Length: 419
Image (cartoon, rainbow, N blue to C red):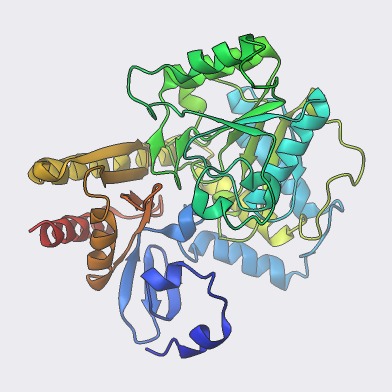
């Protein structure tokens, strides 16, 4: 399989192709097919962008019909029929049933741009500049978002100082007994702590890139209560684990908290089309017209895909219940693998349909298992500070048979690597 043209002309910055060095030609559901006809189960899903699978036929039909109808595709922030239908559907199926009263801001097409907008909005509304983020956080690689991203691999590429952000230990980062919310509360209450009162706290309820670190419900509630008491804007970055990945549409629903700002992207459009959204409490919407802009914030094809995805999968609880059921299957299988290879110190963590299995003592295992799995027809990535976590992100629409096939490959790959 010839990759020479990519090596010759494409920048060294490319990453995923180094782990999965084939040329892909087709995609259908959970299956990617390369140009030689070999098939691979996709447990990467565009890093969480394809919750409804590749080329979902329900969404595909709607998108083709829209294109053939001559509907607006590029709209800046003009009012269009497609945008109106998305807003109406999102309000009816997502916001109203959850008692959420948010305004919607359509930002540039990437999650990072939505993070930038959220941080700017928090700073404008409070008049403060400092932001609190967490160890192992990942919020994007544009400069403002990068300042809240913890991993040195990404930060080293900035080329400028990344300031006005203080990192605090995430839930469980130190050990189970360390109360990082109590620690943050102490910093905020001490004028000599060195922490200026922040405009915002930005958090992922489950850190995907950071290693599938799952925040406890009690920790999230304590963080929310602290932000309310201190007048700090709480931003939940739901870019990777929102849109149903954890079983509920928003990942924070289980905790019962109501963030001031929520950021969505990745699987929001349903079909892998670029789309990002900032949800904000109404009183935070102090933007002046055009003060945060972007040429591609009106991707009407994405609005169409998102609307159909919501109508298809979120009109009742069946899809959510299915995701939770599949998640239990994954958890049970990974725990079985961990038990069989107990000498390697494997630990399983996750929720819904995002799971990780990691050996803290042998961080190279995940990479080796990913490589072995690829030879067996499975695409699965690693995450964490050292790439030590094997991360499972299959489409949520995966069949029982496909899930079993993928889990069997993972199990076989562990057996080979740890033989």
